[in-house]
Length: 443
Image 1 (cartoon, rainbow, N blue to C red):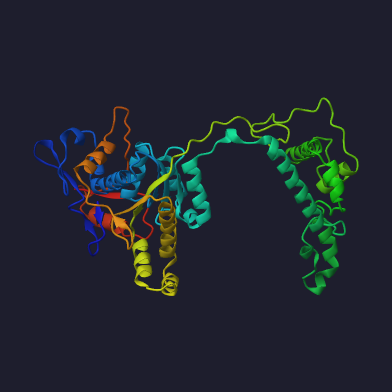
Image 2 (cartoon, rainbow, N blue to C red; image 1 turned 120 degrees about the horizontal axis):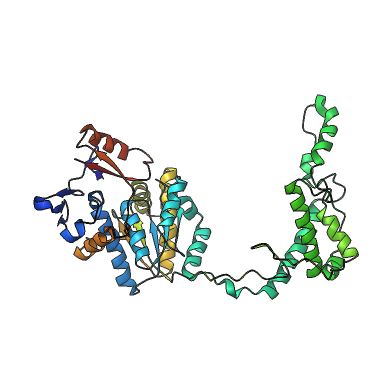
């Protein structure tokens, strides 16, 4: 693999694998690889044995400190070698994984989906930008840990809440778009702001423009709405709305007026004179997942929870290192805020996303480990042991069905055929926003 920590970068002699005497495989850092394992592992994968072992070591340390075999694990840097290994090994061990793809690859939607595919429900993967929304990310982690029990939905209580929300919304609508407006649009749109020479045509053009909107609404008596607009009336209104929507989408059914639909007027008339519910009323809920006020949602299997958050793994990258060191060097809160202001956007995002993960893990009492380097205030993993190397090798083994639990996305540059490919591989690895793959050079 490519080592970018040395000057202009070079093919790493330590993170490499080569054929030794009698067909054995020798790793530059860990020595001779177990022959029984190397027979079923691509040689290119073995170049990433160190980051894979680091991911295994981080998982082992989290498991030992939490004293829990499984749980929910958070991973930052899920597209990097160690982070990707941690995601897959944790998933294979029965953990629920919430992975965050860092800024290097978060703009590659297809790759984010690919990382998501490496996890099993209830685990998932999101981009770095999602983790910046701390409340949303926290809710996602909580849902992953706790699961969703759809069978606990109290429909009898919620149907009246739905009706109450609708009544509040219709009163707000009538207030926002009164009948003295020619259409249900913001009054600002009715003001003439053009040149004086265009004023003569403004009214004509506006009449055509406003004709596509529903008209303004007459006031609705709140007491009458509360007394007469029942769940049965709401169901009838919803049916009218569904008929209108279907006619508009399909181009008309020959009966429904697709050019005019005034929902507030319909509700007002239904309040003044409630409609009779026909005995042969069409059954609601004939369409999958259709919202119905008469019938509860279909029975769904509950989504199992991943269990409490037991730890987090942070893969260190240059942007995150620069941001953490700048913040740690400041001694006061003001100094830390000023340090953040002078960071690049990429550094700010990396710091904010990793901070989201760290905050959630700390609140849950989980263990936090960094891989691929050290960060101020966080514990780096210990040197991977033999057991961690064996865990990584076992994950890389290709089974009889042609699959393995630990995979990488590799781009190979065959310098044995063209020596200049080694220099080109180093150049590609140093590119800003390098593509979603790990580079391997063969000689």
